Amino acid sequence: MGLLAMLRKEWFTIGIALVILSAKLQPSIGVKGGPLKPEITIAYAAVSLIFFNSGLSLKTEELTSALLHVRLHLFVQSFTLIFFPLAVWLLLRVLALTAIDQWLLRGLQTVSCMPPPVSSAVILTKAVGGNEAAAIFNSAFGSFLGIVVTPMLLLLFLGSSSSVPFSSIFSQLFMTVVVPLILGQVCRTFLREFLDRRKPPFGAISSAVLLMIIYTTFCDTFSNPNIELDPISLLLVVLIIFSIQISFMLLTFAFSTRSGSGFNPADTVAIMFCSTHKSLTLGIPMLKIVFEGYEHLSLISVPLLIYHPTQILLGSILVPSIRSWMSSRQKSSLLLR
Image (cartoon, rainbow, N blue to C red; front, side, top):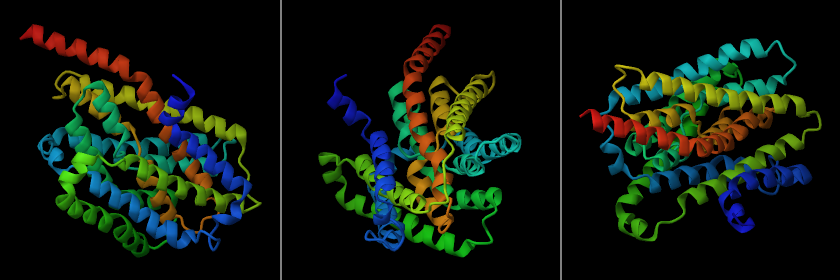
């Protein structure tokens, strides 16, 4: 793979590194009250644009075919929004006894509370040849469910309710997430033929806006001289994230392939990715809303910024192996008929 091809493929990951570096070099540009006015342009305009874009790109008709697979949906949503946060909470009881930065540990808890992503789980499920319709439905439904459930989980596990009232969280989420999503879907009904013909780069647009949000988040951090990131803690968090992802993928694989589970190999693929992946697109704006004013907001955000590229990297590495496994299982099923 040439350098240019690699840059095109990994531009978002490279972009994250560049915006963090830019924020470190000149944090005054993106701080609250600075030239970019992030309290308006980011908190409202940028976040709304991301979800309007999602609503415009989401093919509602593709979700209806997967709607009746209730057992699969219940498993995915229960795992990612109930089991995942509780398991990480128990793990953090142990990790709290170590010297790992407490704000990074809190960031791990925020990762566990996030819904599945709209993009990566679907892309990887499709790459393997799994149940793409189920992945699309659970990613979209999980995002809608996360609008209500994720802030409640964040407030429950991180105890920030004293400084951020529920009413302000939900009203801002409704105006910047729900309304733009609905408007996007309405616009799609009138522009469907044009969108299908031209195929705008919806993913790239959302990712570019997300880089702006990450930039302003780290501008706030680096403008505060009292915040320092411990490199050893950061390395340990990376290792913990890899361990969590691998362990949970193995767990969902074991459960969905056991006798009597009711899931076929294609379902297992969708379950593995949708249950263990977490949304950066929804997560960063939501953290920005729920923890607005926290001086350690960017440290809390770091594990989620690590988790996102890690899940894509790990999933991409496993695609050939999972595809081979699924093909062999499907061939075995045909021979038994």
